[in-house]
Amino acid sequence: MFGTAWFSDFKIESGVANTSNTWNFLCVLFNNLDVNIEKNGTKQNIKLKLTQIDREDMNACMRRFQNSMQEMSGGKIKIQYDMVQTSAPITSMSYDEENGYYVSGYDVKDVIDPYLAQGKYDHIFIAFRTGDMNQQGAIPVNDWIGLGYMEYRGIGFSNIRLPDDDHNYIYKYDTRINTFPEEVMVHEFLHTLERNAEDYHMERPSLHDNEKYGYHSQKLIGLKTWYQDYMNQNIQTANRKNRTSCRNLYKKTSKINRF
Ligand SMILES: [Zn+2]
Image 1 (cartoon, rainbow, N blue to C red):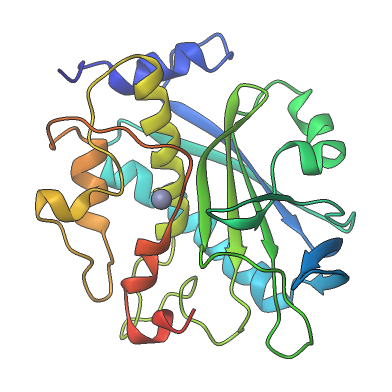
Image 2: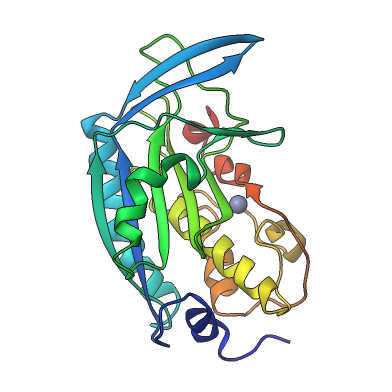
């Protein structure tokens, strides 16, 4: 059974001693990445930078994320966030077979720990690039655009990957192509709610099981209706998942499919 206090219960667990429905997000833009990785059996150094377009896209998406969560949840979830950027590069990455390279909280602890020490944040997004089509070299990632279901020091932690191509529309609002560019943020945050629900042994569908429940990715809005029903507990039954990459988000449009 879903409990009626599904979301407020999570807040109690979050370490912040309040039961409000407001989630405080820290979104860190990593302007630089300078990391040694192994690729095709050889060690390589890869350096990448966010572009001004990346930063603008992330700013716009976080604003939209804040509004969408309030709207989609019928006011049950409120988002506050701080957007920060750092020139301190990501210098280490984690690796697993399923996802390839990704960034764990420990990989960027020197940057995020001082923010977490303030005690106000409930969730972290970090945004970075793993490739740039105008440059040689890209970090091998297994096709994911966001990575969720992770935690760091007791709070939700997600990777937001900027596309290799500035002309990709996944994070861009466009009335003809994509009117839900904040989808990756919504999706990754819901993985944290999914994970918390599991900690409470609450029955809930797996976030990636939309097809099983008859929800298909739609032109312009992707899986927005699924997320809305998911966060309002309008979907029933249970499944289990581990940390998981988010390939289903690629299916939105042909433009986005190019990933
Ligand atoms: Zn996912």
